[in-house]
Image (cartoon, rainbow, N blue to C red; front, side):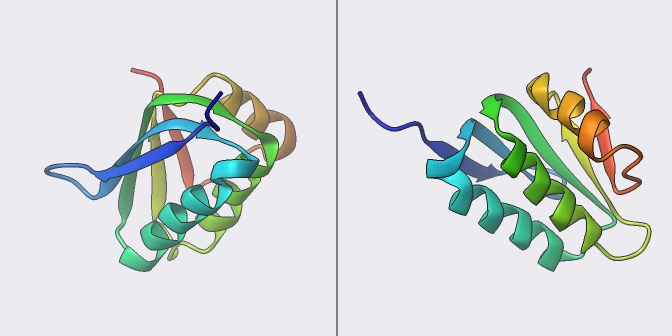
Length: 105
């Protein structure tokens, strides 16, 4: 059985990326690199299209929070249709993150 993967591709027409696959130990580097690139781009709003992500572990969500905390003041990540575990983990371990917005629509 092949190890799970994570693909990252740029969005068209707005700042952000589309991701598909799993966020876990074997894909953490890809996830963290994409988040770091998002921080470096310095956009006010950066979209993470996550409808193709099937799993994210707690450490991956923690990396998301850490990246969001490095965004410029007033900037935010908008997570579009993340796996249900992501908002739940955010609520449990990192509630009230002003730089992370979850959109399930």
